[in-house]
Length: 194
Image 1 (cartoon, rainbow, N blue to C red):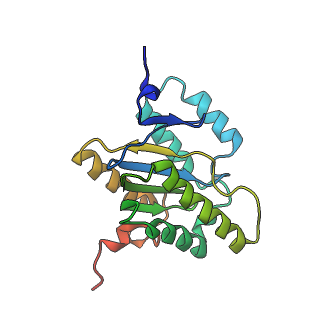
Image 2 (image 1 turned 180 degrees about the horizontal axis):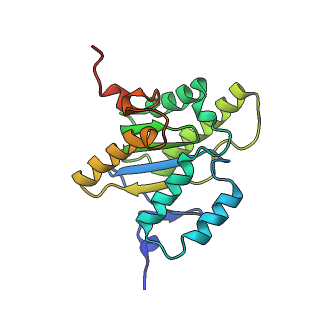
């Protein structure tokens, strides 16, 4: 019997399986190295053994939104740095659809262009921003968690839900009242100032 990892577009680095195909819209989440402390990860693993993937994902997001760790991304300089990194190859290596930079994690909705594998795009975002953020913060050591979560977008309804989720994330976390109030989100670009 073959599994999804046997498909030519599936791969793993020993953590999570990833699906990577050109011209595919992907929802991506990556987090700071300390966004989920070891005790939270262990609790999450023990608590989620029997739950469905959607319930597991919601619980994982709940922990991320609780604001664990140093939350370096809430620093304006670091948030701007990450946002500029997302913009850098937009239109060349990928099409950036929606994003939000939360205090300890990032959600991105992106369509990867042929010749630019998803893992390389994410590596470029993470390696550049880690190096620069550590300089800004006067620190060394890990900045991002080694792996990332990706989910391909199945259809237009799924796309609309993913965009809504990304834009609502700061509201759900209690950081702002309206999505466009969060400074590091594509939601702020959707409103026209009066």
